[in-house]
Length: 168
Image 1 (spheres, one colour):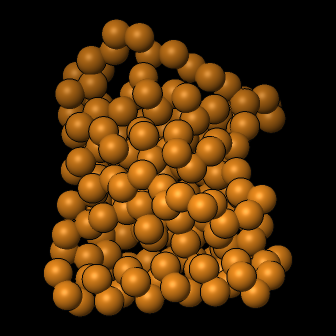
Image 2: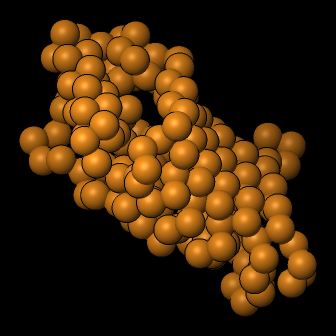
């Protein structure tokens, strides 16, 4: 599959799959879409050539740090779509998330359930140069089930992202 540029991995009859691609050479893979599958497959498919990554309804959901660790190895990523994949923390963490430089990231689409803290943490953790051109946040990601502290956290993270983008 040396000429494969786009790969879509999904569920079969409602059962999440965890395919393993141990020694597959995919030198031209630029787009990866994972639907309803275990996010662990990214580690076997992640290539520095990826420019587009979609993670839709991962099973099981993952901790944000695990996702950021994977994203750290994808420096040429331009588009990132995350839908219902990340565990919502019970509270705003006392420590900020790890910083991941994605210098080419232009588009971030996120749909998550919960308090909205995930959006704030992602905005804190992802660095792009120039700044994001498009941010789509929907579902409860903007604090649909949140308390005042969670909503204030998300809005502050968004404000910081916008201000730092206009300064850089």
